[in-house]
Image (cartoon, rainbow, N blue to C red; front, side, top):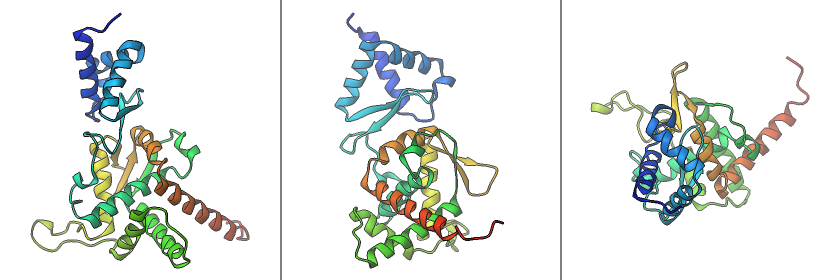
Length: 253
């Protein structure tokens, strides 16, 4: 059976909901209706996928979180890191990219972890300390003449280590607030952006705590295909193995 005008209207409605990450089918009967059609009607699903393909977009998941889309860099719908608050400067774009990739490796250090849907919690302080330690290890790689595969990653760790972990403004509206010249600002800035994409939410039980959502895990699978993530995850595995080996002779607490 050929699709009619109302079917294409439903396709547009479904994509419109998908472009608003805070929308959930469980809270919106209309979203649930058009999503159910996508799941169960082959022709409508094929037409939706073809339309998205023309925009260099594909469906990553059609589960309880709704239609989650993966956007290729060349797509007119692609997010640019420069769109993030205060990330217009190239140095800060590199830092934001490092924090995003680092968050994936921090929460999901292996491919097996990416298949595990356990809730992941992130502390701004703990993650900043972890990322700073990672950058120190990248400094050691560089000193040993070992290649770091991504040019941006090679620049980003240098900038990150040159930043103070915490620095507060002391004038005007910025007084008492984290300055963008410190690393903790960028950890918070990226997590706040992820909150707007429904991929993270503040954890009210702890100061500076966040919970990464299932939507984040689904998108993290895409990041896991990038060389920068693979390299960072391997550095982390080596660190953990070295830590375990160095403590094998420790007395039982």
